[in-house]
Image (cartoon, rainbow, N blue to C red; front, top):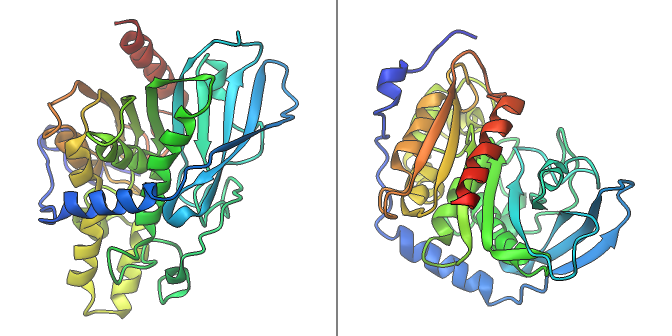
Length: 335
């Protein structure tokens, strides 16, 4: 895949033309207050993961609308009873779920508690999932996939439910006795990266304990540009829908605007390490840089950096970037 987006010198200054809704904060204040009216009721059931050095708990908690959301919590085994670990709350890429019990334990291998949120209504591609999406809008008219589900109104949009689930996942992780509730790191790749940006912004001023964000090639950023230029992946679901429903463009963008990480990340107040891949035709680098350049601008301008992988597509830095993330957290936690 050749370089198809803006050159790097322009990417570093690109900020998006999207304008946030006037009631963005009020919308999310109302949304999260409604969610927190439901008891969190986090449950952690020990489960055999067939591993000798990591203990795993099968997690469930109340997300959007009180719906029960699944997850895994992995912790290094043989912890002292009073031990409290920093926790990485990980969100999963598009179509994936939490996976099998021992499929992803790398943050626990590095000595962290590792909380993996199952993504409602996903887990049908790549990695399996166990959480349905029971909302009535799931049966509405939409393009194949999830990007247009409930897009008739911001109250019904699919990612409203997912972002609430992500916010409450932090609360659930903090409720476990092995977790240091004052040291929560948010992380994810692609869709998981986009959810990371959103959760960091939504937590600011609403939820204590989040100390860092690690959005890796994040999805769900700068919707107007992404819809226009992304030739592959989930964004074309929106273009496909609009190709038939030709009169819906303005109304759909108005809904998507409430969920754009470019807007939500502005409120973030914790350090962040982003990544972008210059040949990425699923999450084009300009959309990632729009998110990065807006991140934290109204949240006190926290420390942030972005690793750029010039010759990579949506796979980004992979294992090379994980080392960068480990180094970033080691420095942060030792300061």
